[in-house]
Image (tube, rainbow, N blue to C red):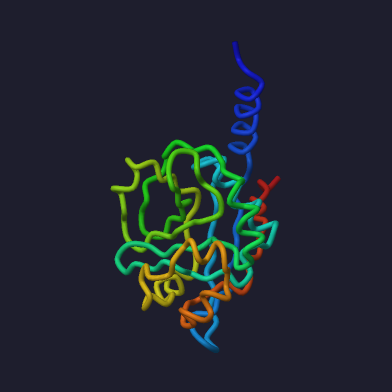
Length: 201
């Protein structure tokens, strides 16, 4: 017997998979006074639930001023904890189910971070290199950087993994600004609707 929850999940998966790819343009501050951009294209057929959550996050605008708090050279750059503790607390409870891994974690792909099974919320990372070892761990890419990868490569990496995620969650940007003022951060994340070209008559 199919439960209502299972039927709803199947419906959501089907709807997300049918969605068209879309793009998000990020404007970020690399260091004081230096701004740059990169663009991510999202493919719902790679990871339907992840793609839908990413769109939800962009629509909600919770990443404004969010810091790139974990930057590991030769591995990846991670962000996604809202700068306001109230928003972080709200979204921390909005976990989504895992997507199957349909695309490898190649350089430039974007993937949700997790803390265990079905634990994805708002944290994502971009792979600096091919990290195919993450595929077998259940990390499912939902998009890739299509412009400005040089910007991603230039995100400040001097603090490595030093920022404490628990304190970011509870204290927000006030903690990061005081303890890690050099961190790069997001100024804006703007949705770009991509309309496929129509066939010529």
